[in-house]
Image (cartoon, rainbow, N blue to C red; front, side, top):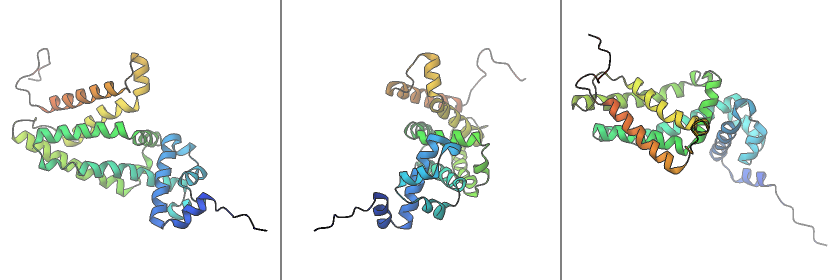
Length: 231
């Protein structure tokens, strides 16, 4: 009598084929998905392991605690956007084109990566504790700020941009304009009775955002009518 063939559980088959780097990558991807949906408080290590198709003990082996895994996931989502920002090669473009590309990229990235918005929302609920405790995260922003400052300086030298712009202020303004639209899209749609998540609405908002930022960067020959004079 033939014995029935045994079936190896999917998770065990996957684990047998994976190397440590592949397992770590799968766990990070699963953690990002879980944390973006449920936040640090609601996420469960069991669910993260199940998403990755591995044994729960491998989570602790590779990352330690759930908090450690959350910090690693946070670093990962930040690293992804910073890597792509560097690939824009802003220093090789004329200043106006460089800024248009940066603003357009910032908008498009958030449109394509709701998990980034969700995890950042959750980290703000925790007072940015994990960001402050991560030397890697703290170091990620310096190259971008330096590159933005260099682009603004080139634009000012050519008379295209104001000469009093601080790169950190400009970065926060770009991030605020783009981030708010996606982080609050549902409430904004409800309040204004509009489908702000539709393809047409997103495209219209993208164009407005780029034009708005570029207009703010341009030098003003005289104060706008009705503005208060400081003299």
